[in-house]
Image 1 (cartoon, one colour):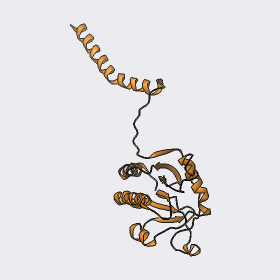
Image 2: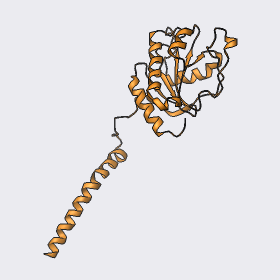
Image 3: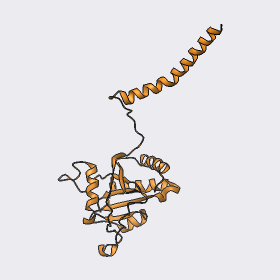
Image 4: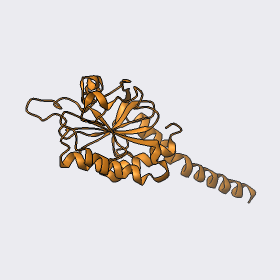
Length: 214
């Protein structure tokens, strides 16, 4: 009887061990040993920039005044220290542009006590802007002129967007994504023009929860 009891106990232990280790072993095999299979889902709503790209430190002219000489410049490190929603758009800021600015504003507000960890930057070409619209609807935004000084930054952003962004016949800055810059000044994610604000918000909540910087 003792021998039978020990045999039964051994079988139970082996069964429990298989229940625990078999799924773990299968997961390791599928992920590391079976090159054609990887999990298809992803958590983030934006497109990750891998590896993250450092953006240049530039002092860029502001749109605070119709007089460019009197408008002043940003600090060269204005893209560092906080998470940044960066949007590049036409100075006319038509409906699509206004929609993206609205989305980033609402995402920032929805972050509640963490909203001060996030800033918004709008880089606009000639013809910007309606001062009253920006002042009333987006008082927190940093509006920057898409001048010659901004060319190195714009070139890096366009390179991330891929070929065809500036193809002949396409209006400059048309259907621009929203870029996300980390507090170290690295371009690390972008959101397609049709990306939903809810996904952007969930991404930001997750990043701010996990991040010890910015």
